[in-house]
Length: 122
Image (cartoon, rainbow, N blue to C red):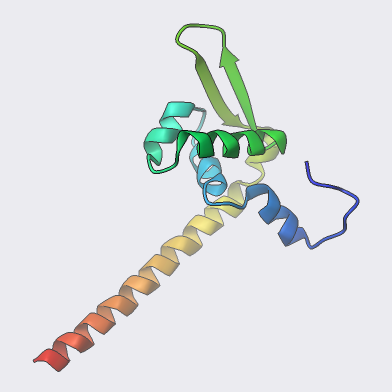
């Protein structure tokens, strides 16, 4: 957990908890329900086993997700959002919406550049 004695900006606190390349993505995919470790790996195969494990542990330590382990062979572990973790839903969905808008803006900009280059070549 974060050191509660150090006063800092609340945005910094939020980014300390959900920042990093994969934490927001993990939370986003857990919004739709419980996922097993390998399901999360299939969603983003470029994340290494080690990195995903560390990110999940961090989120669990912060009380954002819960890990349920079943005593069976092969081992079965499921991850889901805690009630507190579910409070991140509006933030994560706004981040997704902003990312969609940004991607659209960048694509339009690239398309305009492409059209200008095409006109210059003509």
